[in-house]
Length: 456
Image (cartoon, rainbow, N blue to C red; front, side, top):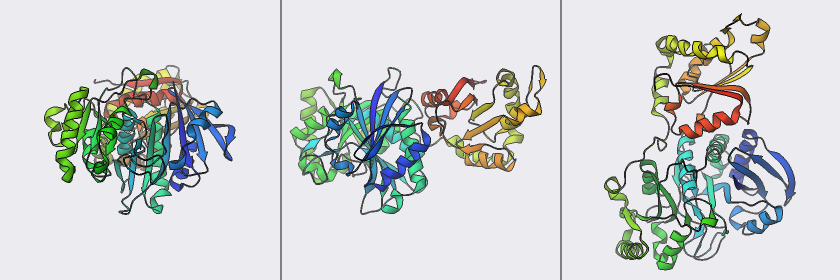
């Protein structure tokens, strides 16, 4: 179990926006105070969490290490929830590691990189891709700004102007991405083991590296963008590789990096020098040099569908929502008939991948082995259905079904132990990350989980 410190600042409207949504999404309890704000604690099946609200801006929180030691919290990793600002003003949801390739203009130290947890950054980016609201771009960013700490650090941000920082939709989306991130363990022996790389070249928002992470089993740690390449020398490349970790277990002493990834069209006038530097360093350290324009021949595609922005099925099912009950009603009711006798005794149920919520009707009209339920029992029942298809949910609401909402199985918006029973009928194969979805179902179930996969 890991200890993760989540840091926001009262000076940062985006961080406070996400903080508000996180407080509603997870069961926190106050224990102690620091810098005038309550310390909030929570625990997931995998992680112990501390939510600290700082008075100064996060990029200047250089004393967090000593603060954590004084609080008695190990802090295996720091997760910063903050704003992103840019002159272009493009609405974004982003993640990146801290550090400075050159001068320390925004916290940290000159020519000093933090510790980039590459696997966590991969999963954070994919969570942003999945939860990013309409009108926002999910991106990784190049390594920049402070603080410089002795533990792995990851920033997750809302950008890029004051309008987006306080947008409740963006705050909820980033909170959902955080909940999804905290529901998995990228270092699990059963987790996907991607290539660990450092990136050189390209734009600040990592256009080519974003594509690489979505298309291939690849995790990017530190990124030196095109504008910072003049500051890249052997010492900084050594730092980038040495301080890109596969995970957060510093006791192992393993670097994790096995390749240097070049944005081949994003090296500019530095291309020849950077290529020579990368090849020489790689040859002497047993690494590989990869190019973004040749990944299709050098790296196998990702094994899973986790890299997709959202299930294509959601759009398809929305397109047939008006006729869904007629098309699939008999099939769905046949599935329900097999399971309902085994869950009749429960009073609250979550239906993950509920479609139009047809189970709502069967749940409230259930006939178990002893005959019809008493009306008094039915009135006390609570049904909640969740599905990623907006069209299906809207169709269910029009049909008069209560308790339906749009949402992702990988980031259930409920507190631990919220339902007596959680069910999912032939829906998990649509999930991009089945392991996370099942873990989320286990988290919110008090007593029982029922998963149906009749044809698989």
